[in-house]
Length: 176
Image (cartoon, rainbow, N blue to C red):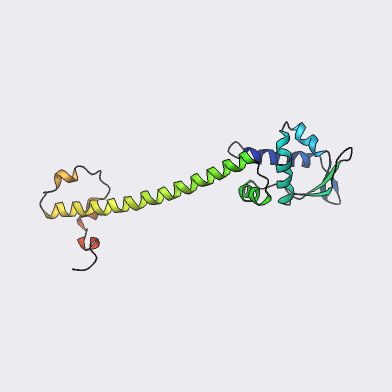
């Protein structure tokens, strides 16, 4: 769980606590107790209370049967433990993210998108360099080594066989 967001750790801890303290009623696990007590027992900040229960109810992991308050206890039916793989999407849908967690997730998503974009650019430029290098090697071979000094500046990217088979028509628009 070390690589999961802290919010998910808290959600799973609350669900697991409710599950451990539930009773079986007609085949359904039912938790009855003070939900604020769960937060306190687990040592979580009160700031997490609303986001955690929004996530659990919004994702249909628990169904509130009776709302507690004052001296009354809350009653929840447990419908299934949250799946960590669905966390990011459901967090947004349920509005359960707290401000810091939401901003962090948005930053990570933006960084992932930027890394993908940059990887595409690097791949595109690598293809161009491979094509240019193959052309230079082929030209050098055809001119009996006139371009040796220029080729020494390149780190080999293209196997010699590929360079020998290079056709300059690949670099033209076909207007010849």
